[in-house]
Length: 194
Ligand code: GRF
Image (cartoon, rainbow, N blue to C red; front, side, top):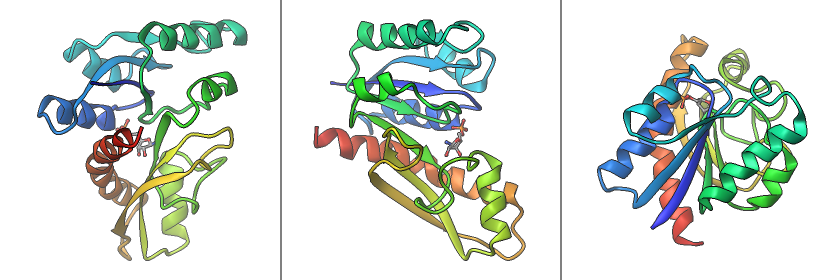
């Protein structure tokens, strides 16, 4: 059985969608833990609801970088997951973690990478830039995590149209809906090749 761990910082709708698809039998996997850097985020509520262990590891809980990295490494070593799934984790992973899990960390990004990725392109800022550039389409990308932000190998994308009267918020909601369907399928397909 595929073992995954999830890292999230926000509302956790992607995390919930993945857990729901596991529950429905679409994705044969076990979610072993949620790591968050925000102890009060929506993802934590979802984890509690589903009885998934939560580890709050952040600059606040572990102000010394080496201790922060060791705490993350401890969780990875304890559960030995096959894949680490970043689902709205708003912090760059330490290089030691990326190397420990090479080709086994997936991220979802709310644009059609390589467009609108990298420094500064996170959250609503991605959609603001897409709307400002009058793009005709946008979407979501699932990619492997490498040492350079948003530059790892692209595994899958889903496209959505951008309407002329879209606000960044309206576009964000349209993209997020696609993310929920794209992520679990990409995890399933990628895991099948491992
Ligand atoms: C998503 O838009 C995802 O692409 C980005 O962060 C957002 C997370 O949303 N990386 P949620 O917390 O899963 O609702």
